[in-house]
View: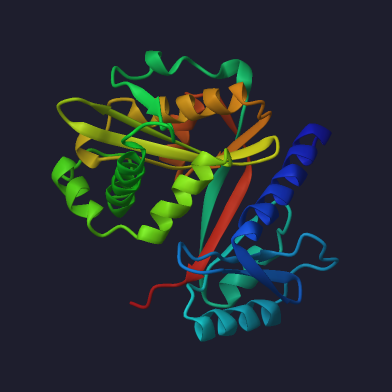
Length: 280
């Protein structure tokens, strides 16, 4: 592994460890740390301890899963394969299903102008706008519909499903996102038209000079219009303007990774996301 790539991956490890800490307490189980959210909101996960001397064992994974069940939390684990290559086999031996997602870093010199990627405008959400709270809700509603209908193929779900999803949103999650945007730790964007409303959305989380782009989603009825690429490029440009020099994301599949290649990202590793295997 070249030194630049090794340094970038080390910085990502520190980022992954830092992001949950201001909203969660930690519990350590061997070489794993479980993040337990304080109050309501999206539940966190377990991942390898930043200071662990040994790789996580099957006993560590089993202990964390038992604690997650006790707390009523999802049995969720995340890690970067290049930092913990042994954990993949351990997780699978524990009965977990592991998504191996392409981990990608931005090459800033290859970042295109978002306007060249789609004819649908993308705007950054501004806490000073009168409609800021409504925009946050729309961002999350678009994401809910987009991720409920995975992939990048066109489909039927569209504005009607987005509007129906608004009523199902978690109020605590909305308030948390609004707070994070207001204090600069998060950037949220929406893409849409006056006639169709919000069609695509995305967000980025920042810790110092490292940021992760996440939650990029497009309503199935609006796919194949360059919206995912335009949303990603807008977020990346906003982050660069704010002084962020390491920007990364995890693609949900190889097909989705190809969208991000168009925006200037390159693959540097594999982000592993594990959960209990489905019972057939």
